[in-house]
Length: 73
Image (cartoon, rainbow, N blue to C red; front, side):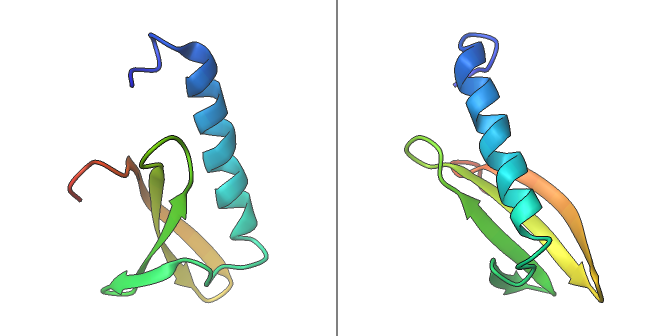
């Protein structure tokens, strides 16, 4: 879905993604291990949702990429 065609859905997707990222402050290891020290956190939205790829480094969380669940990443 292109966000320029449905701004309301785009806004709701951004809110869901930001909420998930903020949750990593308290629970940085909640995403599943995806190899090479990377973790993936699934964000429910629509049929496939989004994936946040990140690393936990000491007390910090580094977001590496956010992509749609249908993308082959």
